[in-house]
Length: 267
Image (cartoon, rainbow, N blue to C red; front, side, top):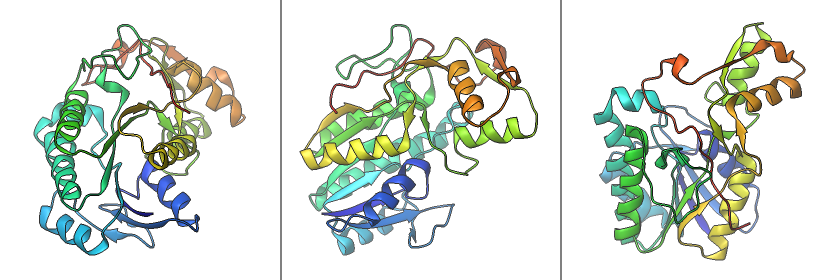
């Protein structure tokens, strides 16, 4: 099977890229935009001409789209940019993939829900609180309606041990290493998702022929505070360096779902 990953230099895309490269039965091409990676090619996925040329030349069986603008607060402050990167570009890519009959796998988010009554099932109606979530819903809806072979994957609080400043665990450990107090919300509850597990289960879903919406998350439902405590403990730092706070005290630009998390049905 031939795979094309748009956004292969990111956390999820990177794990997917490395896994597929080491599978003898799979062929993979990865693209990056602002974070070059050896073996990948540069691509601006808002450039429809460049995307079309790449698709027609490579002819993938599966097109993966982890590429996005995932900074929730930046999306809130700059909704036009969020719309361009989280709606216009992935919808255009989806249409182009449809034209060559490639399966589209789009990574969405648990932020499509409002966090008033989690954890949420795949059949629950979205009700996002912020620009980022609304834009993800728009793209989900478009792809499901206009691209026949579409798989929407919703993870939540994706983490890994990658030494990358875009990775939640890395950022926490760097703060702890410096002896800084880490503020962590006690009222945000979710289902943290390990990148490796997410990628493996996403590949299983693709090979199984899944379409529609699939929730892929970790087995535990934790507060942001509990998750941060577990990271501190795992890396040998004092739990006293983690300070419990409320979400409102963070003065974030975008609202967060509080009683959140997703229910996974499929293995």
